[in-house]
Image 1 (cartoon, helix red, strand yellow):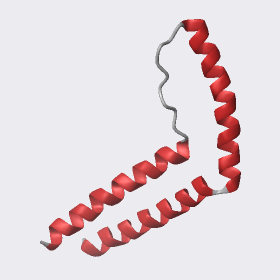
Image 2 (cartoon, rainbow, N blue to C red; image 1 turned 45 degrees about the vertical axis):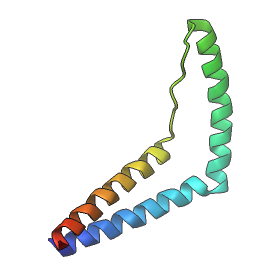
Image 3 (spheres, rainbow, N blue to C red; image 1 turned 180 degrees about the vertical axis):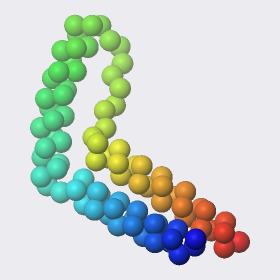
Image 4 (tube, one colour; image 1 turned 180 degrees about the horizontal axis):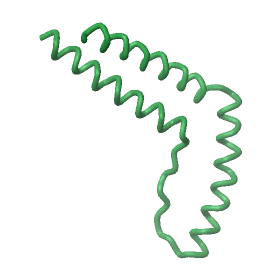
Length: 85
C-alpha cells in the first residue's frame, strides 16, 4: 500500500509540474490576458446592465486543476507521514 501511495504521490507531483509549466508558458499567459480583457469588457457590461454589486473571481480550468492536484498531494503526504509514525 505504501509503495502504491508513494507512486501515486510522484504521479500527482509530475502532473502538477506539467500543469504549472502550462500556467507559466508565454502562450498561456498571452491567452489568459486576451481572455481577461474580453471577459472584463463582458463582465463590466453585465454588471452595468443587471446592477450587480460584486463580481466573483473566475479561475481558469488549468488553475483550478493545479489547485486540486496540490490539495491531493498534501492529503497523500499527510497520510504517508501518519503511516510512518
